[in-house]
Length: 116
Length: 110
Image 1 (cartoon, rainbow over the protein chains, first blue to last red):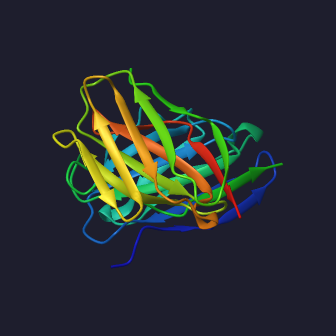
Image 2: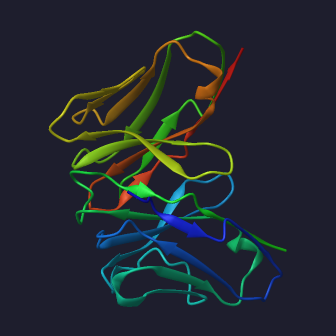
């Protein structure tokens, strides 16, 4: 089966610009998660979708970040306007069951965002 | 709030050594613990998933143990190889959202 796909793999933008990251989960996985890793720090949860609904967005850093999941399929994470501190690697994960209890999580390869 | 600590932060060893990576967590009420590997510029690859009712899981040269009561997990790598060089992350799931440690950066040199 195809894994979790993220693109772009890399993005370099200037401060103030807008960037949209995309994640395609494994087909049939209702649960989709966004994570971010800032250089030198641990991976932090951003938000969780169940199908098209936001189950938990407590990790979203501020209102410059907007996540959507159209029709419960792929998801996008938009950063507008981007700031320097937004630089990092953005990971997407999906799971077959809500809590990943049985099967765990499958992660994408991440999008490395650099804001200059 | 769950906190996950991984020790050591970095490790450099010669090829062939047996290694132990440690992961500790503060809240023992977890559903499972998952070990991941991250190669430079790449995503996270799941290595082992241990359910809360289990005490260990094995895959090839890897063995992971879980002691919920003490809040600890160890990842044992037997006969390390240069290809094992990567960052190893543990993630603990208590409230359906995994909490990650900062990882152990491993370098195995020939």
